Each structure stands twice: as structure tokens, then as C-alpha cells.
Amino acid sequence: MILFDNSIRHLNDNKNNNFKIPFSITLLLSISFSSLFLFLLLGGFSVTDIWAITTNQKHGRHGKLITTLGIAIKIPKSHHNNPITNAKPNHSNDKSVGVTNSIGNSSKVVILTFGDTEKSQFTTAMPILDQYGIKASFFITCSYVGDQGQTQRLSWSDILALQQDGQDIESKGMTHADLNNLSPNVLDFEIGGSKQCLENHGINSPNIFAVVHGDAWNNPVVIDTISKYYGFADNGFANLMFLRCDGYNSNKQTDCRTYDDNGMLTYANRYSIREESHNSWDQSYLHNDQLIFQKFVEGVNSGIGFNNKKGMADAIPIVAYHIIDNSKDPSSTDENLFAAEMKYLHDNGFKVIPMSDLGYDESTNSMYIKQ
Figure: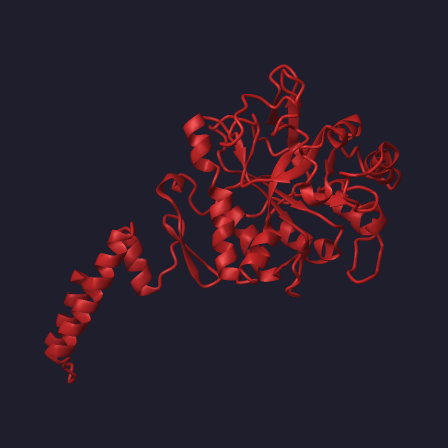
């Protein structure tokens, strides 16, 4: 407000200036600016933030506002230890990112997944991931590979190229069937057969199974079949997953045992790793990229406070994608939005790991992030 009033006085006092702003306009503008200043100050913005908004500045390394897709995102104060970085993208194919559960390394860990074997994951998503040095997990449905029906699917050469690029290739069954009401033999075909299918086509040691619809986390028959062939399963939905399975308010657990002492299947374990569906945002917000970007930022930052309080990396958001294009399909995420989200992760110091970087400690019955 003081800067604004001084600017008006400077214009009016300048002898070489033939234009003089009337007092009534000066008073009106001063009152308007004062109201804006008070509104923003009460909303939790600092004086630096307010100056950036009023002058349309984009903060750099030491700023608190990030403007993306034409919107301003306020980063909570607890996140200021990770300023925007201008570091060059890391194009290494090494899948081990050196993250541990120690808070000293990073409290900002994210996992990205892709499902349904969509062609755009290779043609559109992979170049963007490469630009920012990000590795994700791609879950393949064997019968979908090469299918050129209503939606283009990945070919085996695409999938092998993804693997060569350092991306994580895992299984999502043989035929994309709902697993809950299948006979034991058909379950073995869908779950075990898909592992063999991937290995037969050159995929290295798939060890994670993604359950169609994520709806078998409470089905012990399905869980037991998955555990015969895989070490982990992407199965269920939540805002965060917890390496110690101890952060779910409605289901109190202290570890990730698959069955409790009474022989009952637990809510959270290594075969019910829960993710957040990006397509639920795409559909709920009708492909409004600005609103969806805000939800994404909130989502990937949601575990930081929990990790800081606990003193270790335990809470990890997992964001699931399918199609990356501008078709506005219910299963699609807009290309520019996806690029902006990947840039946000890179610029704000997130450790993005593939799901294959998860390990399991039998002695503590907890998951961990491999070295």
C-alpha cells in the first residue's frame, strides 16, 4: 500500500509530467489496493507474495508462489526447504534412486503408475518422463498388446523400448478380467499366466501385479493367488500408501502383515498397495486443467507433514494414469497438464521412484525403499 501511494505521489509531483491524477481517483485506487492488501494478508500470504501477485511476478529459486497453467499455487511454509531447482534433468537409466526411509534424504517421495497398455504412454508420456528424468511403473495386460481396436495399444516393441529406457514393466493380467468371481484355474491363468507372458516377451522379472479396478484387496483367494507369483500388488485406492501400513485412520495397524493374529486378511499389506486415480480428477473436474493441477499439487505434497512428524519417509502418494492425450476421454489426462505435473515434481525436488524400488522386510513386516 505504501509503495502504491508513493508511486501516485511521484507521478503527481513530477514537474515534467503534464498529466496529474485527480485526488478522487487517487483516493479510490488507494482504498481498493488497501482492501486487496488486507484480504491477501488475512489469507496467509506474506508481503513478498502480495507484491508478486500485484506486479504479476513469477518467483524463482527463493519464491513462494509457483505459477503454472496460469494459476498461482501457494506452497505451505513447511515445504520451503525444497526450493525450485534449475538442475538439469537426470537421464540415467538406473532404477535405484538412492532413497532410504530416512527423513534426512527426502520426505518427498512419489510413485507414478500407468495402466491398460495405452499407446500414448509410449508416444506422449515417455518423452515427457525422459525430459525430467522420471521413471514410472507400466502395468501391461497381455491380451491388449498390439490390439488396434477402439483405442491404440502398446506393441511389444514399444514395451521393450520402455524397459530399455529404464521404465518399470509389470503385470495387469491376461485379459483385464475382474478377479473376484473367477475359478482357481482361471485365477492362475490371469495372474500367473501374465507373469509368464511378460517373461516370454523379454520383460525382466515382473514382481508386481495390478488388480483390475483395484477391488480385490479384501478377497483372500485373490490375494493368496497373487502371493504365489508376485511380491507386491497394486490393489485399492487411497490418498496415500504407507510403508509401515500404519497411517490409515479407519484401520489401525502397526505393520504390513497380510493376515492378522486371528487369520483375518488385513486392510493394508504389500498386496493392497493403494493409489490415487488421476482419472477420477479428470472426470470429476471435467478436464479443467487448472483445478486438476491444484489437486495434483495437494496430493503429492500430502505425505510431507506426516513424514516430517514421524522423522522418516513412510507416507507415499501414488498417482495412476492411463491415456495421455487431449481427447477428453474419461480415461485420459491432457498432454499439457501431464507435462506441467512432471515439471512440478522435477522442479520441486520430489524423488519419483518406480514401484519396483519397494522392498519388503520379513523381520519387521514393513516395506522400504531400496538403496
